[in-house]
Length: 446
Image (cartoon, rainbow, N blue to C red):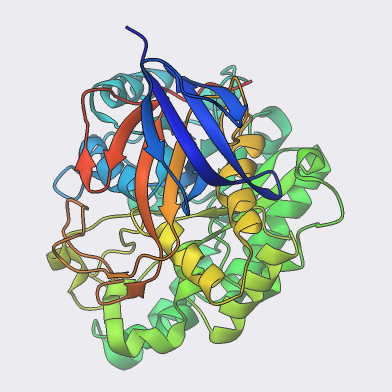
């Protein structure tokens, strides 16, 4: 039996415009957009006064499944995602085992088909150990290859630290190459200096000095030069410094760029002044840096030097975070709250709704060549989120859905709230209630 929803009188935000319209969903797809009459058998959603967005596509998460599921898994974290309006995600390769072969990648897709409430895609991991296998693989149908997170497995896994390996990859791989851009050598030198002074108990406020602007800038500058030399498709993950933003172009459309970048929401929301309050709870790699960097990143997002917004969602248990500096795990959970963070900037007058949708919905789909996703268009998958821009609420333990049970945003008051989320036409989230009977789909590439 066909499943139908008729969303009435929503304010659509899509492709640079806002307009009031009705949207008819039939099965998995957006069937019709316009001034629509009643449709037999359709469930009617009165969206008067509410805003309808394309579903958010989070192009960088660590859902920890398989192998690290005490932190999070594809069910728990995708559940948190859809509650926050995220309908698709790309997961990084540092699960256990690391995703360093096509066989492990296929196993991960099979696992997601059983568990994920949102649509899913995965990067193939690349490092010095499997570089030859990767460049011999047909990567044309992959979302991309990445080294992100693999440096936790062993030193020397960052491509930014291995120009010879990076050049070999750039010369031979035609998929997107998404890298973590820091020079570990500079980081290690800084670590040694602070360890000499403080031992293992380095104060957390030195984290952005240890994982410094110089470590980021030099790595990014070198990677861009090598990518341009080989006309490779390079994507710099989670940019953190204002200095780096000038290395990226904003004078051509995204479809013509071979060098792109993103900012993660926590680097827009927090700055180094927050370490005193939150400590290692906001320890990320690359580090949250200065207020000047935070403002510079937002400016670069607005003027299109930065192409995407992501979360780098990385759940750890509270016990894993609340340790001395060198023992505390890097990363924190954000996927449930990323849209809320950006809507708060909208409420403050710092960004338009159209720009939020461009960076969180349209551009990830365009960059990663996703089939029929990222836009509200007839014939596209009905990945949609309905939002009330006049709904005040506060993040607390009772409404956090991450498996790890905490958030660095606890106590934060937001003024917008997701009310409904559809994934492939299935109403998976409805004002706090979940329908987990239908799972998401693998993201296909054009």
